[in-house]
Image (cartoon, rainbow, N blue to C red):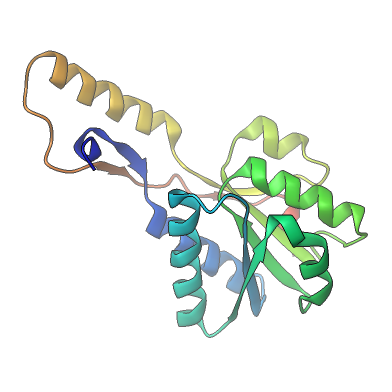
Amino acid sequence: EKFATLRVTGDDEAIGLMAAEHFKSCGLEHIGFVEYWGTGIEHRRRLILQEAVARSGCTFHLLHGKTLEKQLRNLPKPVGLMASNDVVMIKVMQVCLKEGYRIPDEIALLGVDDIEFICETAPVPLSSINMNFERMGYEAAARLDRLMSREPPASRPIVVPLHGLTVRKSTDL
């Protein structure tokens, strides 16, 4: 990647590990990822979650957004589902509610980004992993300042640690 050294990013590995640990602590043995776009970040987060679930001794399930209704019917319950971000998880939540599933009792839902407005106003308040966007912004501004001062670019991307997981009703088992 030509601009990889200019990038400030969240810790995708920590996201997958945190999600797997959270679902496991909720007593869930079946954990899945809902893939909508198949983009790089979504794919990376899915793979890390899949590996963490396998190491934890739980069963991993991959779901695709386009056939979600049918796949939900075939999933063992209870199950915990994660998506790449809060916006996608709200779409999943809408499908779950339309199909009559009880959240979190049958299907626990976990987003990523922890955008308070989205998570708090969801039909069922959404648990989410906090990406620490404020720190990401400061790191990006500092990197830009150094570049504008004609300092050479850093040798690798800055990976910002997560700011935790906010538990709301969607995973409050």
